[in-house]
Length: 516
Image (cartoon, rainbow, N blue to C red; front, side):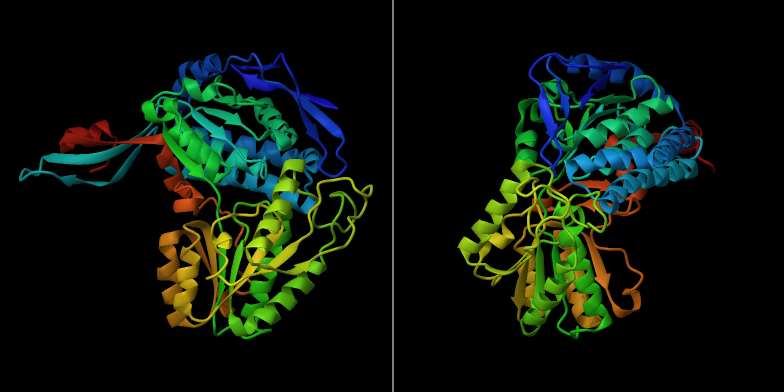
């Protein structure tokens, strides 16, 4: 058993009080303890503002990028040990690689962006604009690092990737990070934090890591600070309304619940390449990370005439996935992360059925390599419901290996039903019909942070819908939280202050380092 400490004000520290217990999701054995009682969060934030912020702002983008490159390499080099730590949360080896490689890959991407942005410490947006009749009087939009701390509250499902993707963007922007992982899977986050600190490449104060309850940290945020949260929509709404956040105008980014959708076009023939692509993608999104992904597919809209064939195809595909202890040979799906999560998923399925959904498939194989009755296992489940009659499918996310198949009768109906989910991170469209694709893209775009279009020509080339690329925006409107992360250089904007600077064009060009 290991004791997980926090890294605050440049030192590893331990709290004094009642311990929080971390258990192995497969065996329910205690594997770690942690405590944050008595830790001075305000002092840690001040340490970041006084030391980490100025040091990062003094560095060029290229220098910050080199720092990220070193951290990315350290995580990659420590991959095997990090995979072992991920087992505690019920993660299979394949899913652990997905999480850890996502962390190192995102850091590497932003390291490359830093190199491209080069030897400057701030950004100038666009080419500027003449503001009056005089060609001398010009205006530019300048983006400079904010002088506060980026507080990151991360979800339990991606303890490596979630920590690294937020930190990479903040550090490249020139802002220090205060990272708070979800406690149930904090063992991997702790190992990532150790790896980061051990590189020695971060300036003093650039990284704070709180392993356990966040306590009063939000009470000490001010107008230059930022809060990025990933988790439930309910918690995100509470955070936004907290007096220290709203009264001091703390900048907030939320990634929350997302009823991600798939629409299979009316032109897609059963057994075709596009059909097989859709089946493969949906099955992966149900079972990868045991369905505990913010990008996992929750609603599948299928032409009514193809509903039975899709149910059969998905049941067969999901049925081939072996479930059990993450380190057992051949196992591709482990348990959910905690007892609370197991209870939440089972209760969610029951609510959907009570509201009118039908249980179409449920894998009933006993988990491999675990003691009977032990572990937080949930059966992969397919539900079927009428999208116009069972409102709960558009209102609630079951965060586990569960998706609902929903028959539709026209493309216009599919667009309308997807919109009933009130916003998502990702919607996937499978069709080779250009007219239908245009209708779906334009109809779903206002409700989606990202659209993946599956067609015959990319059936064997496209990424899976659940794959988040650092070059593309991650986030979504409405229920998905209304925030944006990543997206290449766009991701830096959350941590930068955009300021209109007006004056003599020639003088401003010299001040801002612009070429004539």
